[in-house]
Length: 61
Image 1 (cartoon, one colour):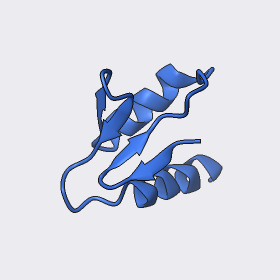
Image 2 (tube, one colour):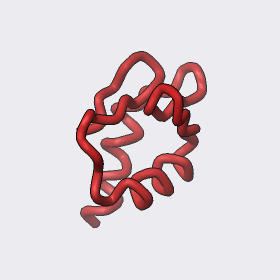
Image 3 (cartoon, one colour):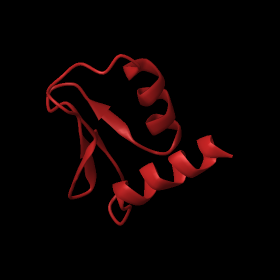
Image 4 (cartoon, one colour):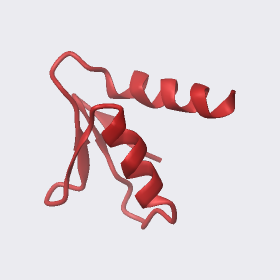
């Protein structure tokens, strides 16, 4: 549901029921949540889709 957009992950329009948990995980992974733009920004050179893939694989194990 999070859409990669450059060096960021954009939140969907609908409210996420587990937003607090998602925010915690993405912040631990290096993301910074920007309320104004409703997205998580990552350092330059970080591929946000790889961050999400890594989080999903670690949750599955």
